[in-house]
Image (cartoon, rainbow over all chains, first blue to last red; front, top):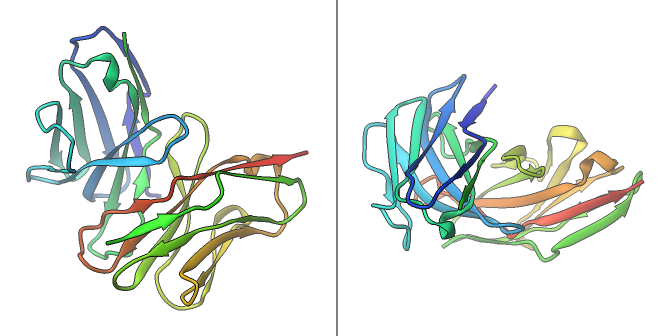
Length: 117
Length: 115
């Protein structure tokens, strides 16, 4: 149980392209979804928190217009990297939590490796 | 404010030996503590959590962790390590207040188990 699917797993594209990453909770309804960025051999950096039907809450220093987050349903959140540039290349990971209890763990997708040429 | 420290970047052990990965935390209220494991080019897999109750928590793949409130620690342990345990391990904490469900992660500890 508690499976989170993230797609695509790997993207290579030209500078200036917009890239959409999907995060789906397959067997549960995700109350909240999170988007992280991870640099090689480093920890996860929280980018934003999204709740279904409301605007995402971005962490300080994360550009809202650059990283568009849509949480259209309780099982789907998307991250769109707009006009991507080489410095946006990174490993992006989503996670989802279910239920209303604060002690529930987050369940993570397998991540998306984004490479901008 | 909440934070986590993993004091060791790397831990190397021989297969069959005990494995310990250290974690200390800081919170304003009471902690919710989690351990995750990450394999190359994969997301994080949940291993175990401490919410309340027994200080010794048992999780997946034979791992366990001991909550020590006086030392503000939550070390991950496995009595007999396997080569397949080689991975990146993250400790994470969430304070009970505010209830924003955000996790703070440690920097990670790379575990290498040699055959």
